[in-house]
Image (cartoon, rainbow, N blue to C red; front, side, top):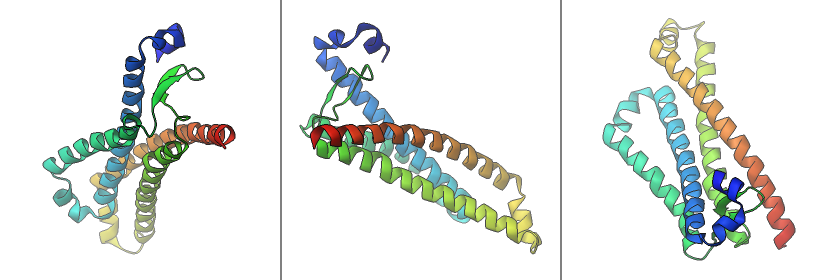
Length: 193
């Protein structure tokens, strides 16, 4: 945060509760954002690859439920930090309050595995399936006018454009997180082994 950059660690020395709140908020928001990206990937996958089921599966109530689930998942990922498995602290290297990756080696492995790696694999699966579906449909357009009409429909083209944009966003997010997590793993195993 900007406070950490300008005020330094001394600012948080007497405000540990505030630092823990900021660390929790950051972790919860990051976890929630990845669940939301996953929800969007599944949404696009169903819309494009299983279009007949889309309106039945993505009703207004279920969409609200997915939003609530995303925040609950974000809270559950950070809950161990409040139960003594991990913790939050001011990290002088990043000048941020964040989860204490030195407090528990097992949580420092659990968090990126369950909250980042597994969701990213599921999201990647959805986008790969979407792009394979689009590619196969494009190949069939030369042999079938009905498939060509379906693929060339405005709705399908718009859905594929949205999927491409969401995949680009997901890719950027994933690259940034994996660089950070790789540095954390190297640091954890060098310091704690």
